[in-house]
Every structure is written in C-alpha cells, then in structure tokens.
Length: 102
Image (cartoon, rainbow, N blue to C red):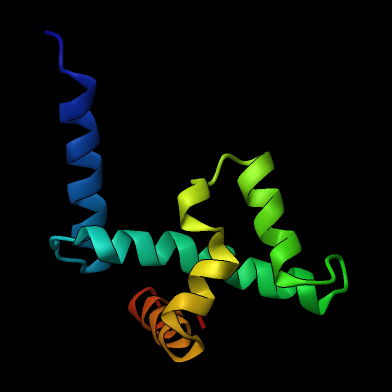
C-alpha cells in the first residue's frame, strides 16, 4: 500500500509537535516577512560590526544585486531603517523568546 509523502510528512510533524508540546497556529504574512527580513538585518549588523562592510547600504547593494532582493524594497538594512530599530529589536526578541533561542 502506498502512503503519500505528504501524509508521512504530516505524521512526522504531528508527532514532533506532540513530543515538544507545540501547538500549531496560523502565522500571518507580516510575521513571516519580519522573521525573514529581521534575520537578514541581524546578520547585516554582524557584518558591519566585524568590519566586513563599511556601510549598511553596502549590504543592501549585495542583497539587491547578488541575491535578487526586490529593488523596490531597497534592501534589508533600508527596510530596518524604515520600520525603526525598536521594532526590529522587538521582532527579533519575540522570535528568540518564541523558540527559546537564548
């Protein structure tokens, strides 16, 4: 009897959730965007701190031209400037707390 890969995957995930005590929840599009972009911003901050790049705009240029980041978004560091450092810190802190990443 054939079991679809999707069914097998769903069982594995359900078992893992039960073992870890996680309950599934809906994740909004803005939350997904924040998690992805704020991770890039965090790495960009490390690159600046280590002196690998001189300016935040240098990092944005790499993302725009090297990784295909949408030009109309201006790059992850530009995005961080637009939403403000307190919001970036808040979002990153929530993710750290949610996943016990300390």
